[in-house]
Image 1 (cartoon, rainbow, N blue to C red):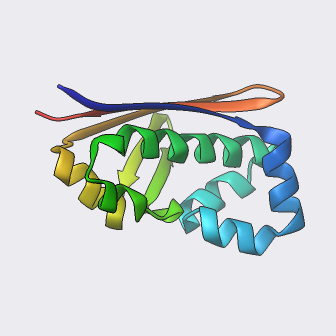
Image 2: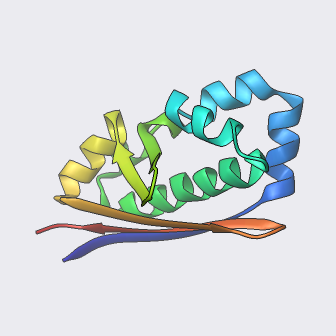
Length: 129
């Protein structure tokens, strides 16, 4: 059963400016080390960073049915998009995001990412048993 859905769209140029102006601060605050390692080696790294921001925002929206106190305390790095060679990206939840998902009975999280020249988008579905 679906217990949460979320979608988000992010302007890639805005993310490129943010990472360009404050690279270490922005990357440390918004992304896990695995996410940074994955995105930095890509030819158009801002596209991949923007897609991950969209996925994190979509996940916040999908977790909206969780108790408000838990959903508000979710940090950017509590939501992680993990890329594996030859496989679609997966969504891993940590800390407050994991607790919010547990409160909703989430057993499976699905995520899809996309980007073009100007925007990145993500869609998240959270399912229970």
